[in-house]
Structures are given as C-alpha cells and as structure tokens.
Image (cartoon, rainbow, N blue to C red; front, side, top):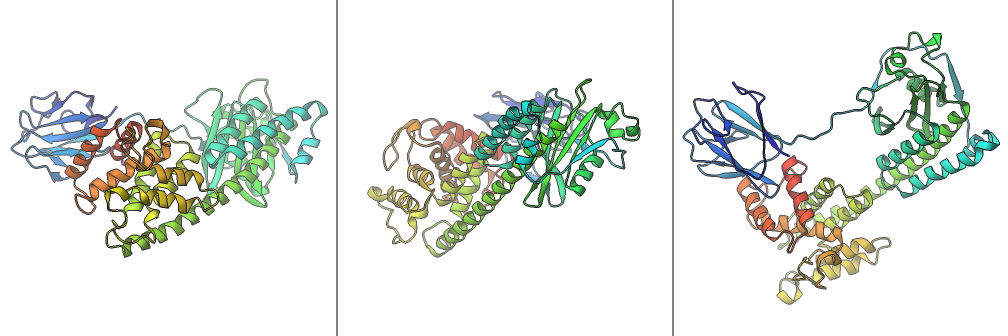
Amino acid sequence: MPQLRIKNGPAQGKLYPLSSEVVNLGREGPVQILDTAASRQHAEVFSVGDMFFIRDLGSRNGTYLNDERLKKHEEALLRVGDLVRIGSTFIVFEEPGARPTDEPQFTSGEEDIGATVELQLDAQTELVEGAAAADQSVHYAVLYDVAKAASSAFDVKTMMKKVCDIALSATGADAVFVFIRERGKLVPVAHSRRVERHELTISSTIVRRALQHRRALLVSDAGTDARFSGASSVVMSGIRSVICAPLLAHEQLEGVLYLHSATPGHVFTDEHLRLATAMALQAAVATEAIQAHEASRRKLLSVFRTLISAHEQASPTASEGHSERVHACAVAICQTMDVPPAEAHLVELAALLHSIGHFGAPEGAFEREENRYDYAVLGAKMLRKIDGMEEVAAAVEAHLERLDGSGGPNHLVGHQIPRAARIVAVADEFDRRLSALGKPPHSSEAVKQVLMGLNAESGQKFDSDAFNGLVVALRTGRLLQV
C-alpha cells in the first residue's frame, strides 16, 4: 500500500500509510506539517480506486509537486517518487513492498581452490555414459526435465529458474544459482534455495577458474580441507562443497551454473558433477536459442515500427506516435499484471499492430458509424496471412470489443474477448482520450480526467484488471511519458 514519508524537518522519517480515507496535510492535519509556511488545512491526499491524488486546499503559500506549484484547489495524480513540498518540508509518495535484494555477492581476492576435481567433456551422451548404471535412469530423467523446461520457456529467466529448481532437487544442494554474461559482466538471473538466506557469498575464484578454463569444477568438503584456509568466502558461507559448471554452447560462453552445499555429511560427488555439467550444457544451448528468437522478434518489431511510423506520419488523420504509445502502455500493463512472457509477447505485437488495418485504405474510410470496426477486421485479415500470427490477429480483431457487448465487430462479451485484446483496448482508449485533449506530454489534470472516465467504465466496458494495471504502471513510473 502506498504511503507518505516526511523527508526532512522535525518529523523526518515519519510514515503515513494511505488507504481509501482522505488524509489531510497541514499544521492540524493527521499528517502534521510543523512548518511556519503550512496552513492549518493545507492539502489533502485522496484515492479513486487504486489512484492517489493530491489536492491543494486553497493554501496561502501553495502546495508544490515536483517543484511545480499547484493552483488553488488543483488536483494532481501522484506517482511513486513524487515530491510534495509544503513550505520547506518535503514529503515523498512511495510504495513499499519491494523485496530486499538477496542476490549473492562475489568475493574479491584470490582463494586456494586446490581441492578440486575438473571435468571437461564434449557431449552430453559422454556425460551420461560415464555415470554408474544405477544412476543412468535418474540422470536421463533429470535431463529430460531440463529439456522440457527449455522447450516450454519463452525467456531466459523463466527457463533458468526451472533449471535451478531441478538441480536443487537432483543433487541435494542447499542453493543453486545461474549467472549469465551480459556486457562482459556476470549477472544473477535465477536461483533456488532450500532455506532463504539474506547473505549469500559466491566464490569468485571458483567462478573465474571455471570460466577461464571452460571446465566444470567440483570442490569437495571445502570447509574441512586445510587447503582452503585462505578461502574466506567458503568459511563465511559455511560451504562444504561446490560445483561450478560453465554454460557453454557452440564455443560461446553464456555464464555459469553454481551449486553449493553447507549440509554436514552431504558432499557433491563426481556423479553430481557430471549431471550438473550436462544440465549446464543443455541450459546453455537453450539460452542461445531463446536469445536468437528474441533477437529475431526485436527485428520484426523494428520492421513493424518503421512501417507504422511512416504511415502515421504520412496520414493527415492518423495520430502520430499513437501505435507506439499504445505499445508502451500495453507492455507496462503486462508488467504490472505479471502476464506470462508468451502472452506478453502476444500483447506487445497486438498493441503495435492494432491499427494496421488503416494501411492502404482511403482516408476517412472508417469514420462512418457503420464502418468503425472495419479496420480491425481488415487488420486481422492481413495478419492471418502471416504464419504464426493467428493469435495476434484475433487480438487485433477484438480490441474494439467491450465487456458489455457494446463493441464490435462481433459483439463479444466478458471473457469471450481474449485477454490480450482487453489489455490493448485499455491502452488504446487511454491514448485516444488523452490525444483528444492535446499533444503529449499531457498535464496531470488531463491524465486524471481520462483515468476518471475509464474508471467509471472499468468492469463494464473495460477489463478492470487491465485498468488497474494501467493505474499501477502510471503510479510506479513504469509508464512515464503520457
């Protein structure tokens, strides 16, 4: 739940949680501002649904929002990070709840990792054949699970999270991490742990050695081995056993799979090393494939963006930048709704291409009431000619439908309308109503006016989850330029 926090002055650090109740700010308000420039009833914060606004109450010295003075009795939408100033007192609007980082920290300096076993094999078949016969069926089952995870994932983070979970279960590790190389640095993208710990230390020496030599490393019973007396990270983390396997695909180094155990009596074996190495190889190949698919998707988006932008600039009636703004808005809504990656990609394409039916049509062809849905039908027809675009076409065709059946072209109701279309509908209508009030950037009053109108129709014409996602995106800064 959002809150106000006093940033300076006698009440510095004081927190005021916000709810549906109106909160007054001033010398005599619940949020007491001990400032000589504050009026007794200076300003108030109120909510409309999930939206929060600040209103000046006719104060003598004014209420400032991000250094801009509000007019007397003016209202403005609050976003996370906004600074309200009353006199010399600053109040920040924030939304707590972001989880504290529990990303592992790398040690610095050199460590003695002499007690290691190194493994370098070229094929997963060789890895499995090297296992004891009794373990082969287990290994094949684990690698099958990894293959399933890789084939069903649409992004690297989701896939690697599944790999971590599988590795944790298969090896008895206390914690498993995946680090991916991005711009020359290792970035943690996924982890799985038996017991949540806030302080995690990763041996940089072990990781560096695995990367440099492109070999999987097994460090066994490190906590009791005298040769690790200088390895501070091993001692600090209570690590008794470590496996670090490079993510290597077609000679391309993608990152590392890192497993550690601090449980007394549980030490990784050569079989664990072989299995982890095979898992790392599979994950690396899958990562390469996902990244290649993502690169192709971005190229496709770039082509569509160029064509749509050229059309909007050439058309005297089109709102320049409309499709791009709807795209940005829909993406932000998906993020706040935690839409799965595959569906989010669908929404992204549908939002960018929702008005593609205007291409090639005479100016004004869709302005008549009886023709107002034709561009959605035409756009869907165009997209269905492209392999793999059937779901995008369905979302484009349905983005003018409304929950109560008042939309078109097929007068669908409720969940007959695909969720992707319901999200695009909110993003499209939000931008259309804002554009009717003038060119961007728009004033806070204009944004408020449009949001209030959409709020009145939320749950009736427009999907309430999508609308709430829009509000949260605006409030948290995911959608900045409107």
